[in-house]
Length: 342
Image (cartoon, rainbow, N blue to C red):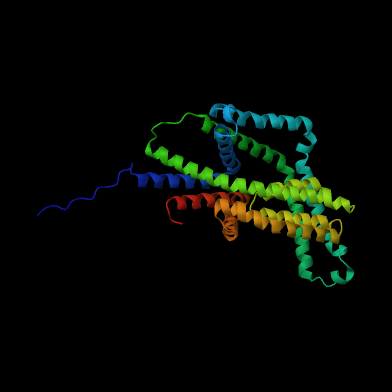
């Protein structure tokens, strides 16, 4: 009786096992980043890598294109120089940013409480008690967020330091010499990192242009259109900055800016608040075109997909999950596309 041939056990160096191990490792790293508050560092690593690679491979620079080492040095040194210039010329603006946003939130909370008094008496008399209770809750929430900004200085400094360290790491990755014949695990890990950087580039570039468009239009509206009618909204500069930074968060950031800008307009007069709302509606019509051409083309992701992953990420990890969800989802989708599953 001839013995049955035994099936060979898979070696630890087989491509399937190596790829699976790098997928698991990537997932663990992404979860650890969210759990321990290291998201600014991860995003900065991607930004430093992408900036250094863009400088060292750009065809527009021609013969003066720097080497990878020189490009890494530029990415590391230029932020320090810019930070020093900002500190030397605008110390008050930098150190009082948290206080100004705290004052803005207090101002919005007072506006929420005064909305009933600003409305016409006939309309205010028909407001239900539930709406008044919701109004008081929103005012209390804004006040609590304003108090939370008191400790923003130390947290912001820690996050900025973490982000700069990540920027240095990302730049040095490009500048370091690579291995000519990489081992299977190293090659698979490079593939995961390359796909993650690609997803980061898709999300960040798309959202950067959308946030810039929103901020420019808001600045033109607040500093150009409204002053023609002798109307000035308090904290206009803070509102423009908030529009840009919140606009980097897909969909939810725009909703946040819309609510804040409308409340700021209501603090002046109901008609000004209505004008702000009409302006935001008009801007959103243009945003549909931008989203369709920029975000949709780059990521192949629809609005309901982004909203779903952002809500899940925020529910589990808070604000960090909200910010990271579009990036993680774009990376997962890119990996699935590479293996032909979607």
